[in-house]
Length: 552
Image 1 (cartoon, one colour):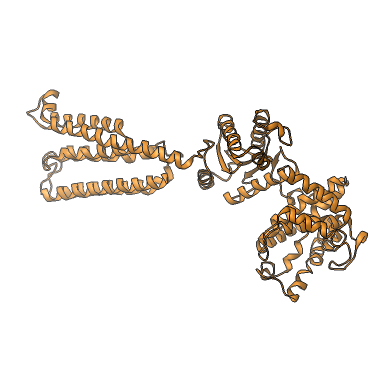
Image 2 (spheres, rainbow, N blue to C red):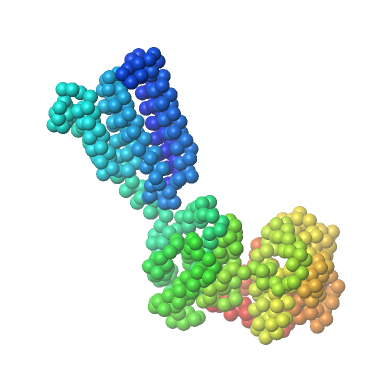
């Protein structure tokens, strides 16, 4: 909005400049007199001055075109190009006044131009100051060119009406401009501020994020911190939304007082964001850790009844350009880091790290091929990326509850993230079909575990997970696919992924079905215990999910 206003303002100033030049040139031509016969006593002398003012007009246009390259970083400041641009009316007025003293009667009126422009842009004080400057030039003009005026007092008396008019114009126009500026700032503050917390709101945050990506060099780091209050739904349910709003107010005040660099805003609900220009991941992690500790120390009403015995927050961090080259990408990765912090362990700061970036593979060329395939499947099926990340998180929680070895957890992480890579071979019309699949389409879809196992075989380090990917859709009673094996013959890690995959599929919106609530999904997993899922793993998984959603 501010940028559009400045652009419109410059349009008006430029048009004013050009109109004044046009009027003066026309007046020179119509006067039919040589302006400086003593200096240039030749015919058509005014043509040279016409050329001179045309060049001045060209300078105005060039400055207007190049203005965008010199725009100050903040709307409140003025660049030196802006000052030069607004000084042009004064230069023009003085030139007209002194050059045309013989041929243009009442040329003093043109001195109102710089006063009008300065007062309307910079306010009352600047308008009065410009009126004073113009008055001094008018007095100087009277003394130099009018022989009957011999001192400053006579000059002031001679042009008292002009001088008074100039000061009245500067005061009046500047006063109106000041009132408009004050009112506009108030409206802008209301439009940009979250009324509950006093922080910036979601709209302002989005605007500033886009601004940073548009004007800041890609070499300059930009970090984004997502902050979410842990178990806030449970807190609201226990104490009511008015008490919950008070927590949001206190947290907003803490962030406003203690986060001195960057932009702090309320993203929505119990989520806040901190935007840190020129801050790398290490600096952002330090800021997030300070925020987490600051909230832990703060006393909140009823905080002792929270699962941690106090109000806590989780933070997710992403940094551009490492974690994103666009606002949308940076937000997505910071949001995922926050999701990871909350689903794995609350009251935690999590820096975004893609599962792919954690792979420790030596065959770089082959691994890059896998990365490319993942990017393609994500483009074909928008559900896959978030689904794979969530399945990985659930699977790791099960593995840790079972106290599996670090090596098995690492293999499970790779297999869970890549379990759907075989869908690269399936047409997008099947993957995103809004209705039910027919028998032929279903048979094609059931081949993706086999295709996925073939794909990962191309990377030597991933060979141990081929059987996990191949059998992640096998059922405990042997009714699954592609080979129909059952019970203990199905690798343990594949059985873990089977539960995590099914739960996330049931609780996620798809093109062909609406998501279940967590409780309904748990009931469905219980119902299928011993048929689709390993009964022992079902008990472990239900314990994890129940604990997770009881604490929310």
